[in-house]
Image (tube, rainbow, N blue to C red; front, side, top):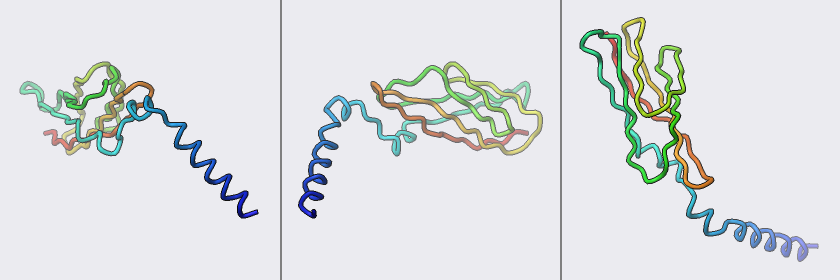
Amino acid sequence: MKKVYHVLFILGLFMGFNSCGSDDAENAIDCLFEPVNFNVNHVISPKNSKEVSFILLYTGEHNLDEEVTWNFGDGTTLKISGTRATHTYSDAGSYKVVVKPTVRNGDAFCSPSVDRNINVE
């Protein structure tokens, strides 16, 4: 019985390794390190100190989806087309803005979280 188990185990390993072809390896995205390719910059409007413009910068090699999810830290979450967003806060304070872009490489994709702490006066 042990021999049958060992044969099935080795056969399962062999089939598992062969199921990932070269296309799968080429299309893989390392989601653990993908966030280092992103940065969120912000500018506070000189006319309205509660209006903040954001831009998501991406320096990676994969394709960035057009739609990006922005959580502005005040309970407002929006899906916005493009890498720029403007938000007007109702109250002064410190906010943690969380951006969730999606990058794709073939069928593989990754949606890392990128955050930025801001102070609104």
